[in-house]
Image 1 (cartoon, rainbow, N blue to C red):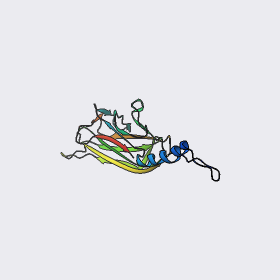
Image 2 (image 1 turned 45 degrees about the vertical axis):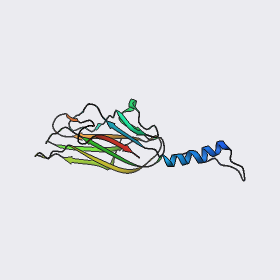
Image 3 (image 1 turned 30 degrees about the horizontal axis):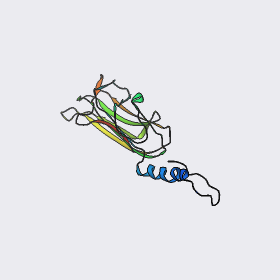
Image 4 (image 1 turned 60 degrees about the vertical axis):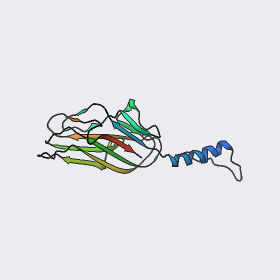
Length: 171
């Protein structure tokens, strides 16, 4: 979004101002800021009883330069607005303890987007889950995606290609 130029009285719009004020903003509406990222290779070991940042290695869509492989655990908001954020994660099979997944804004857990999953004691073990929220964000806000588990030891979080891929979407 580009803040429209203030013109005095009956001043005419130049082609440059027209492109800035009208075309840029129509394009922003047609292709709003959005980002979809995934973890597609390897596993990430999650320590017992510790919230851990998920690192991603592939972006499927990024219309506003929100994700970079050099800051692979963060989505940085460049254009303020209302966003729907979703996060999906999965773990290796393990019937002990609980699992948690959370969407965090500027390093604080968004309590509206946190889920605690209790592992089963039968074959219906917790393998994955997802959370989502709608949130107003300003430019430079940072989103992170975290997981938690209490199996008693380190537990791997699986990569994409499993039945429940690790993925985050901001739109």
